[in-house]
Image (cartoon, rainbow, N blue to C red; front, side, top):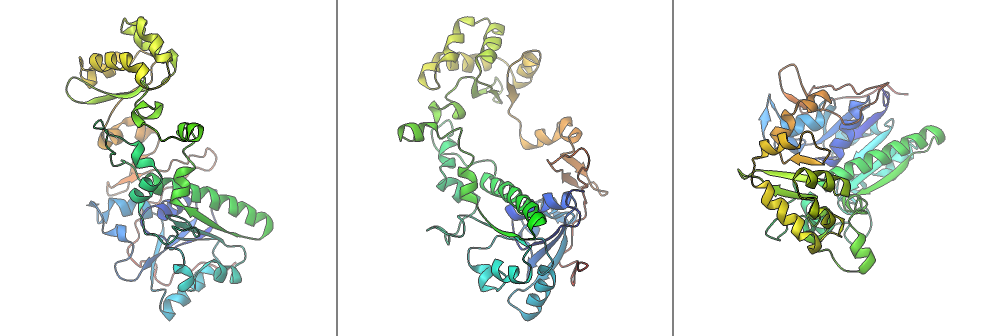
Length: 370
């Protein structure tokens, strides 16, 4: 597999770092999870449990090895250095400065392992005025302006449904780690990667920064294309109180839809900029979609070339056969659900190891010196 022989020492907790190293483990990397003394990785104890493990922990730590270390102790330090001196990657997600106080920071590891790729994931990065500010995903999304873009129909900010700051930081870190590994293979020199959740969110705003960069004014979300201001890119309620979405604002889709609904006279509204100018079209669609149930609209849209989707809950999404077809839902031998990997290579596909490590299962773990 792509990462066979790559050795990863993972000191991170919760979601961004563990997801990064999970994707590496799925593609052949040997990942040793360093769990803190006491109860270990917090997600062992958070949320719903099935088959002897929490669903969260199973789907972020399967296929890894687990050791429990107290890095403030002499024994914990000795165990860390036995592994770090020959690791390809070290991942940490403490607040800035913590690893240096523990004497396991980048400069210390690089001194004995110049080829190491050392990845630090934090809320706001290793420098800047916010570096020591505590924050998890929701607070970072709020500071990044993302929560304010997610308005409910009451015009008030709504809690985001996905940990986007965590997710984007994880994927940013994965990209950077793989780049650095490529460089290390060519030059023999590793690197230090500083990944901030805030940076990772802001990097993905090019499609929504138009107004603020062009005019210096903040968005009115309900007038913007991405947030409901475009009639063909919005949510609509159906007869029984379910919801559907139109998710493609191109005029060709509006033409196909409005011709099918017998209202070609409204097509020109879809050509207008997002916002109040499209109100007559949006009003017609709101009234129309309330005349049938979600299931009836799914059947009605089936033959049309229109970007349409029912608004499902997460259970409905995982129940869709295409999720199994794409390998995004599988089961271990005991029937516990496994979320698959989105990285699908043709020549060397991922191999999902469903084993969930017990806390400190691999005490005394090492790897063959190179």
